[in-house]
Length: 321
Image 1 (cartoon, rainbow, N blue to C red):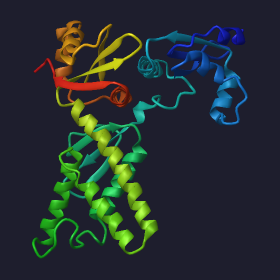
Image 2: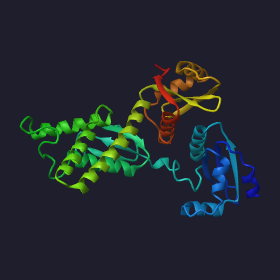
Image 3: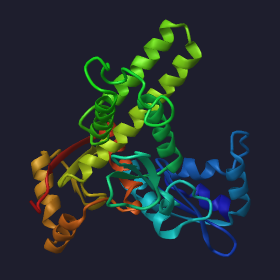
């Protein structure tokens, strides 16, 4: 039965839902080519992970749904994983455990939170608390916020110009500006550490600081997207396809509308038509939304990363303004 079903699969984009003998959906996946992707599970392949091998042993049936584009498959996969919570989906399946990064003006200065707080500067949510902990350690080691080297000279300015306490306050301000997306000073400081380690031929130390640089760079890129999303903007994405242009409206962590044009529209044309179907109540709800929910986190990197790579995205002031 499975072989026959696989043979009849279309070679189109879509999602597939793997089922066990009880009819439970145990895995949801997306595909650019459904036939190729689904059939790959049932061929002998040494590169299959243990998780995949175990999954295949439980599959007795599957359903699928065709969509227009690979991007639509990614969006639908995210929605279904959140809705169904399949056993073998690890990514996007545990958003309740996502965390926040908190910066306060007193010791310990940096915290990783499981829930939102009104105290200090809180950013997030981010989907890996371990990565937030890693960023916390990098900031601490770069700016010496605690420990015996807390007032070591010259991290931001020399003590000839400022007292140790004044210089420390500058460090705090620099971190805050970085986390608010107003500065890239943290990357500059880390790059200085890379160069200093190279100068003393400490290549292992240089490599470690360079890894830190890349970690911070990725984090700040994600944080910049978060800041943009919450600045009362709506985003229009245009994706070229075979004989059509697929247009999407996104705001504050939510995909609001999708339309298809036969000819490429301007962003203004797409925005006007996309917004036609949005109710006043939806705009009011979005206007009152002050931060992303944890369930919103998985969607925004899919939206921005895919469209920036394969299409175009442009932000506009939100209608509620």
